[in-house]
Length: 84
Image (cartoon, rainbow, N blue to C red):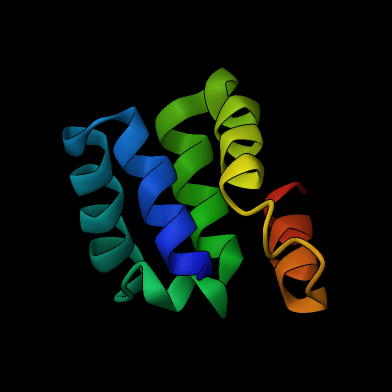
């Protein structure tokens, strides 16, 4: 569910942005979008580098897309890492 919410959030930014994030995850960390659940710091680093000042807006959108699963402790932990 987290990966689906993450993918939807990135696609809301645009297909080119989604492709760029996926490409950088593979290039910089040899991982996929699905791997970000276990390593949210990878995603945080990529998103902060790519989107800078817009990063908080992306987190807000991601939280909105995850509202149905936010009560799960592991999801809260994931978002906490992204927020640092």
